[in-house]
Amino acid sequence: MDLNDTPEQAAFRAKVRDWLEANKADAPPAGGDSGDTAYIDSRRAWQRKLAENELAGLTWPKEFGGQGLGPIEQVIANQEIAAAGVPGILDVIGIGMMGPTLIAHGTDDQKAKYLGPMLHADEVWCQLFSEPAAGSDLAAVQTRAKDNGDGTYTLNGQKVWTTYAQFASYGMLLARTDPEQHKHKGLTMFVIDMNTPGITVRGLRQITGEAEFNEVFLDDVVVPAENIVGQVNGGWATALTVLMFERLTIGLGSEGFGYRADRFATALADDAAAAKDPTTRKRLGEISTELLAVRFNGYRTLTALAKGQIPGPEAGLAKVTTVNAAIAAGDLLADVIGPDALSEESEWYHMISFLPGLKSAGGTEAILRNTIGERVLGLPPEPRLDKGIPFSELRAKEKEAVTA
Image (cartoon, rainbow, N blue to C red):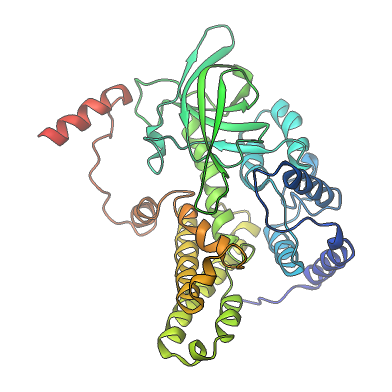
């Protein structure tokens, strides 16, 4: 396998690098408070500038405003953006997950209405999946969507851990439309206008001090049937598409997040005692090995994508490995640097504080390991109470199993 840029890729890299060098003075800071309206507006403007200069939505088809390029070009652009020290797009959820899902499952009208404003950050999107009793077991969602029989649905329920809901224009929401079906089969995906009456957003304060995540309450929220993405009661297939892109975004984005072995090594080398300590070197070596494995597994995934193949559940392994290695790196840096690593002025403060939340994004490690074991390695599945049981009867069955 030749891991060097082809002449065409090298030319694309040079083009991206030259543009960033000429325009990085106009970029906002790479980090900021998601509750700061001025900062978010600056990030919207920067994404708009990236889109206008062919650096957003690179893998989207040209007919939808993208560049029709491959995933390798997207990685090259991400590498150059990170090297320039400027932020990438604001709406990673929209561009990386919601947009591709609309392209795959949406109607022509939905694509025409939503994709252009999404690409230019005129409308930011959020993902309305997790609930208090349905996180990693996503198919257990209880938010109800009642068919009113007049071309509309009424939604009631609660979502949680919703990133950017406080300023999102739209969200993609998974709701239960038929509780008499098996829990995976009675779900439907909706596009939700976040300004619809009946929607309440409440911030969840994180250890970083930010409120990037939110609770979202839906009380008699009326949504037109034309906002359904995919098929009625076929929302699980649409949700799997979103989750695949989410895990790819996290797994392939480790370097863009700043989770690089050379960055960690440089910080540790500044401490003479740590640089000579065999335990520190061993821990750094293990972290570096894991991150290098993620990088080369990412190349394998890129090759599959370039050939038109759809990555399977194995994409979740990159997410698990990336997050665990980054957490181990944060622990090592805190051990070497001491309390200063956790001060708000430290370059490591946000990473160390943010990573515990990222551990649950895209599915917890336990769920992803089960999925990989069953669907990739062919191991026997865990016993399940919910197989073939209507969702409306599931709670009673679970209570029977507990008291038995």
